[in-house]
Image (cartoon, rainbow, N blue to C red):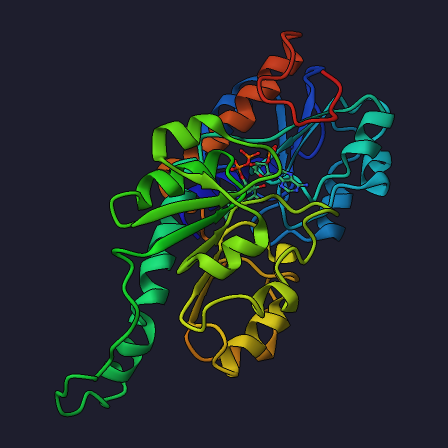
Length: 341
Ligand code: NAP
């Protein structure tokens, strides 16, 4: 148990019920010190602890004025009703809030906030790392070395695609998509993007060219996905789109698993119709489908896009700052679309 975990467990043990009339803030799992310290000074803080699942969270939140949610437990009508009518805020840890039923919150007058911006660089950087690692076959080559199979040198040994000079395709040109494009600019021969609305600033700053999704799939050497998970983006990239790509193309997903049909990606890799894939997110995390685990040329990561100490502390701080702003009556700092403010 590290110091952070110990601090959370201590709070969990000592603050099971509100005292001194302080508002109760229930944290589904944990918050890092940068946020936890701000909250613990002002409120009765209850934390579920690192491995808290839905049952633990349901037992934790009754009477809470604020819940600090995270992606591992869905915040739905049942959970909101368990909190009670005094609930004012769902302060979500993460920019993607697909695990929060915003409509159910709005019906109950509950504000929803997320943590945009502070995780943009870390997530874009991971997408760049996956673009390079998947294109260059780094993990498979490293595994060969570790397995003692590094054999005779020959000109074709461990040859792969190359990122420099490639056409980079960005799907979803929001904060992270634009930062990824900026980071990839020195490598790319051209940046093309697909977004539901045009992004003139990205076009001017990065020389990015907006194209239809089919054209992006056909033209790009590296395709990186940065849309949120919504009903409209569910399986946005499936068998039909993968049938269009160059057999050397590399697909990177650091957005959400539901945006991509994982089975279609596994089939395209196995049948040699897709060059490589770098996936940080999956549809039913933490379960990773067998066909993807077995697929060749796939770099698979356990959803670590924002997982740097600096970024996770900034996310924790922004969660806490939203709580303080709402409970001080100043209004939320970063409400999500559709939230009451
Ligand atoms: P953002 O700034 O809101 O950008 C989202 C982009 O997707 C925008 O360009 C937006 O287009 C587009 N979009 C939104 N809804 C869409 C829809 N229904 N159909 C098609 N396009 C749509 O968000 P961000 O900060 O870049 O974050 C993007 C996503 O990355 C998050 O939602 C989250 O799921 C994911 N993420 C993952 C990790 C990780 O750990 N792997 C970390 C952080 C974020 P408009 O400009 O037209 O609105």
